[in-house]
Length: 430
Image: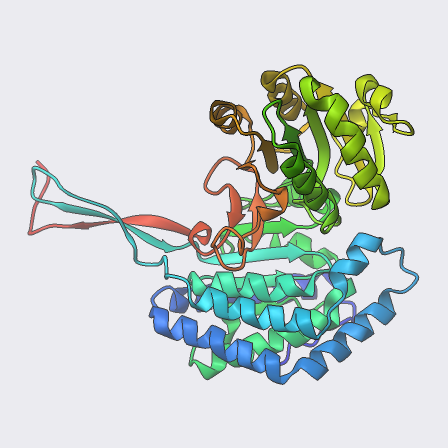
C-alpha cells in the first residue's frame, strides 16, 4: 500500500504508461465508490484519522526531512510556513478528516422531482464527478483535506503534491489508504503520484477519457500552465487579492479589528486582505489609527495621494500594487469618495476571491454584496472566514473564482454533479 516516491527518471513512453495506469485504477475505484453507502465512507475517514494520530512521530519525522531538503531552495517565507507541521497541526489534520466524516453525504440527494403528463417520473439526483486530478504545492494538510473531501463525495482522487512536501504527503496518504482499506473500500480511490518527474503533470492533463476534473492549487504560474494544457475542465482561482472596505457608516473600532485580522492573522494565504479601501468621510479619523496598528505589526503601506497625505511614510501605490497578491507584510490603501467608487475599484483590481465591507448601513451592505463581482462577499467580518471549515463545508479542496459549476470554497457538494433518472411504466414516444 506504500506510495513511495520514485525519483528514477522514466522514458517518455514509460512515464505515459505509468500515469495512465494510475488514472485507469482511479477510474475503476471511482465507479466502485459511486455507490458506497455513507456509513462506509465515514468509517474510512474515521479510520484514517486514527491512523494519523497513531503515526504522529513518523509524520513529523517525514516533515522534518522535507524541511531539511528544502533548505537553500529559495522557498519563500509564506511557503515555508505552510510546509511546517507540529503536533497541533497534525491533530488538526486528523480532526479535519473526522469533521468531513460527520458531514451529510451529498451523493444520492434528490434535487428535484416531477411527473410529466406522459406519466414519466423525472428525478434529478446528485452523483459524484468521478476522478479528480489535484495538483498542489507545499501544504501537507491539504493532502488530507483533498483526500477526505473527494472520498466523502464518492470520488477517486489522484494527488500531485509539491516536491517540498513529498515525504510529509506520502506519510499522510499512507495513513489515509490504511483507513480506506480498513473500511473495505478500494484504496486506489486515493493515490499519490509516485514520480517526481514534472512531465507527469502533462501526461495526466491529457487523460480526458479517464479524469473528469483537474484542480490546481498553488502559484499563479502553475495554475495558468494547467489551464493551458488540460483537456478536461479546470476548477481554480489565480490569485487572492482580497479587499476590506471601510464605509462611511462603519464602526471604526470594528473596522480596525477586522482589518488587522484580515491582513495580519496569517499573511501567506489566499484569503488574507491585500487592499484596504476607506471612505473619504472617515479617512482622517481611521487611517492614522489603522496605519499605526499595521506599522506595529511590520506591515508596509503603499497608497494613493489621499492616503499618503494622511499617513507619513506610506509609499506610492501603482496600479500593479492595487492588483497584487502580496502574501506578506505589505498592503495597498486607497481613499474612495463613495460606496460605488469602492465597488468599482474592487471590480477593477480584485481577483473575485473574497471582499469585505464594514458598515452599519444595511442598504450599503446589501448593495456591496450584490454589485461586487466576488466569490465571497463578507459583511462586518474578516476575509479570513472564506474557508471551507469556517463556512460549514468541513475541509475544502480549494476556492474557486470561476462562475460555472462551483464558486467559493469547494467541499463535498461542489465535487458532485447530477443525473436525471427517468422512470416509466412502459411508455413509448409517438
